[in-house]
Structures are given as C-alpha cells and as structure tokens.
Image (cartoon, rainbow, N blue to C red):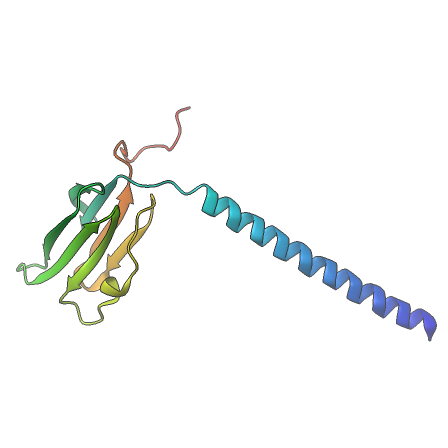
Length: 133
C-alpha cells in the first residue's frame, strides 16, 4: 500500500513540474513576442487584396476610403498619435470600428464586408524578405 501512495505522489509531483514548465515556456514566448515588436511608420490600405494607398503614421489625418463595385461603401481611416483605426463605417457589423487602434508592424484592422484591410508597415517595406542574406 505504501508503494502505491509513493507512486501517486511522484506522478502528482511530475504533473506539477510539467505544468510549471509549460507555463514558464509560454510566458517566455509571450515576453519575447512583446519585446520584439517593431513600431510601424506607414499605413497600407488594401481593397480586395490590392494596395490602393499608403499614409504615414506620423501625420494625424482622416481619410475616407470608398469601396464596392459602385462605390457604395465608406470607411473613415483615422490616423492619430501614431496609431491607425477605422472611426466610421457603413458595414452592418461594425467590427472594424470596434477594433483597437494599431501601430506595430504587421497589425491589421479588417472590414470583411467591404474587403478592406488596413495594415501597419515600415517605410522601407518592399514586400521582400525581412533580412538581407
């Protein structure tokens, strides 16, 4: 009976060690991700997968973005204090308006009904590799 209890205790201890290790690895990964984020300098506007405009994040502005086959949809892109967001839209769900402002490279705001993607990039983004070989 004593041997059976020590096996259970060992198994519980090993499970706790495994759980702590998984939490530690996840926390370290999150920390690396947060520390390696890069501030963007440009806002790229893509409609139906095609880039249509680009704006600097450093300049506060509001830009109407017209989409749709008959130019029947509108979104207002707002760039303020180095962050970009959609402040107004006539889409039915308004998810793009509720999305928090973005400022780091690779972050996006998407309006699926209007096929609109707002993406943060760098000034020297050329669509190529991130590092020279």
